[in-house]
Length: 539
Image (cartoon, rainbow, N blue to C red; front, side, top):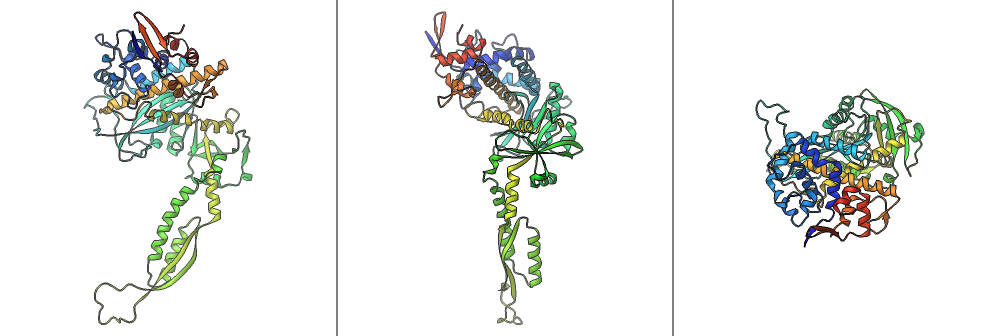
């Protein structure tokens, strides 16, 4: 008798099979006839490892599969010994040479067709992954074209989303569908790239490769004059940075002067006006959020600003002026630089000037020191400025070049923008130590890029599983129990995977059976469809 830990890996393997990832990978990266395990099976094994609830995926890779039903999950004749570091590294090299963005595109298109994912609205965002160690820049061989030898990313320092500026990093750009948050486009970037310089090119590349006029939702990093002109007529929705003078004017405007739009969302108020910026005709939606109205976070930037002003005021008050006109000129210059603040308790006092160092000259009278003047003042914030800052905090502006307000009314645009959390949740998933990467254990930049591709494929499998289960529960009008043992139709797939711990594949001679498959687990497997039933030996 042999007992092996199947756990939740059957659900993951079933989703990989439903996508057709193994067959597609072997078609794009033809296997060598002498290999025991094909590239597609290696990629499947890496995804199983990435969703294996271990804190360091792809580290001690073959050891992960010890005690697990490798043949049952990957194919006949495959053992844990076949999943060694050398085989893993060679497949990562093949993925890089094929092109990580192109490979993901092929997989995502096939997955979208098979699972019926709607890509008419998508969300674009990027994040950084910090790395330890030295990563030298890899130069392309002389005379080699980009098609023959793709250029590796540069792992270097840049703006860190993880607040680790001392570490080198690389970037991951993702485009996810609003339908279930499924990643449909992926690109790895060098560590010093900025969103404002890359977002427009990413949007154009996505539109050309998918051949679909999807409404692309992005954050304020996209909204700049060069980007708006570069994307042309491609539909987009973005947040407007309040550093623009026109945006500040709109945020500070009185509601009576604007055209309010109907909104059923609790507490939200929407106003709309036409605007022309960067030569592009667009709609600006002014949003007042009820959640920001009660928050005290608006004080944080004011406190930071006030610290700097207090420092400047101390410098002014510590300065000794030779005459009153000089003192008055300095005070007026300081007052002119203030916005929203005023000086109170202002007084000019006479002080004895410091005696120059050294022994005084005989001609200098010792009993009549030179007098100077110093300011004493207190900095106070005006009530009007506080009210203005509070209003600016609870309001923000959305902009779009979709002028048809029947198809995209103001409320729908707000809902589309709020769905930006889909891609942000995807990044949190990738950075969760219990899922794919707490650290990257490869040294070559080419393999780092290929590993990022495997991370994106893992997120694709995870999001498709969550989307499918929720759809099946809604269709069957059924529920599962959440972490608090309450019925829900929208469980996270992470919780579902955790429910499948301590499930074993028991082999007795030529017969097999699965143990610890409770009634609820049985229901979940059947909802996930035939591929999952096959792994858990359900008819």
